[in-house]
Image 1: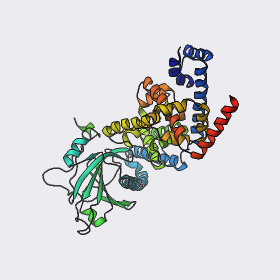
Image 2 (image 1 turned 30 degrees about the vertical axis):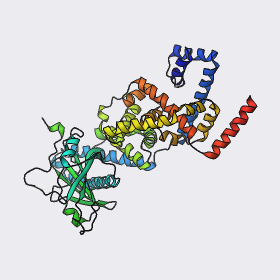
Image 3 (image 1 turned 180 degrees about the vertical axis):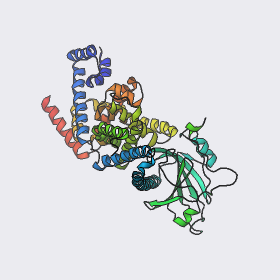
Image 4 (image 1 turned 120 degrees about the horizontal axis):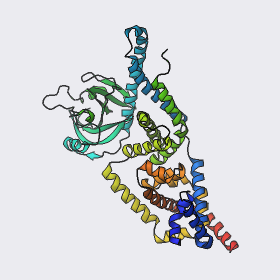
Length: 269
Length: 204
């Protein structure tokens, strides 16, 4: 083994990744080459110091995190269990009533979580991954999500761009619009940012109605309007007040072109 | 009344398997996202994904590596910029950091005062230095030196060949050493150098 090979083998040696005869080669070389022996001592000292420091300083997870995770897992399990419950006979009606009331509360809680998450992600103003007109945005989304994405046309607003995002643990399309100048709150108003999340929800986690009867909630100073069209959920997030928000909603049963055309890829035969 | 359903059992099993690794997931997430709020989100997203895929996990195999694979994938897919921007940005990011730290002068300086480097490693903020590494290097350093996975495990987690792990780890650690040496702490630097010089004189 020469000094050059020694350099290459040094880290694997210190990481216990070498087999026995390779280890022996390293040690034999160090035995008669003071330069490399010194390098070995030095790297060993630095590496173990770095590891020890990193271990000592590594933060523990906040206590609330495990709690929140447990709750999310429980809610996830509850949903599966309730599906099982629903298959039981009418004789279990008494139980069903209690289960139904709990279910309504649980649904409201889930909706609330989605509203908060949408508001939070919109508030973050993460950079757009594609800037441009709806056609460019739709082309850009091609193949990126599990379902095809069509950019809904919003009255009084233009499409600014989009990115791939998440709402809770599912992938979503995030489309940003800007209101047309002066369209809201008087002629001198600045264009306002409007965010729209679009994601597939085949399992019905988000229990909201279709337009024109959406769920309206608020979080972090934003209004969040949530509705669904079949298996697809839409969440519109904006800091405009509720009256103005209503005027942004895509018209249901819009004329020629369907504004909402998102089919989960798995359902396409 | 209905007893433990299959779903409850699944959830309990999952939580039991998860609990020992939550701190590690969070610690890694924090180095990746560099932000406590995002780290929590990343861990939650990771755990929910893992739970949804739990049926596909082969019981008895390496659960920790499986979790961290989901963590790194979730990080890359969720918290990073688009693919194109990512590869361009990271490449130039890496080149500029390397250019900065691998110039001949810096290399010479770093080779000589080995004890100086050790003192820097002991006194400096190691985690902050790790945070300064470009993401490709940061990921392997996190997995190897904070989480202490083997090369093979890291290769599985990141879905790259072992040779790539070794070369990124070599360069990442070298870069980390340069960062530790150059992170300025003027007072400590002066004291360290003086102490080092006087020790060198005494030691001969």
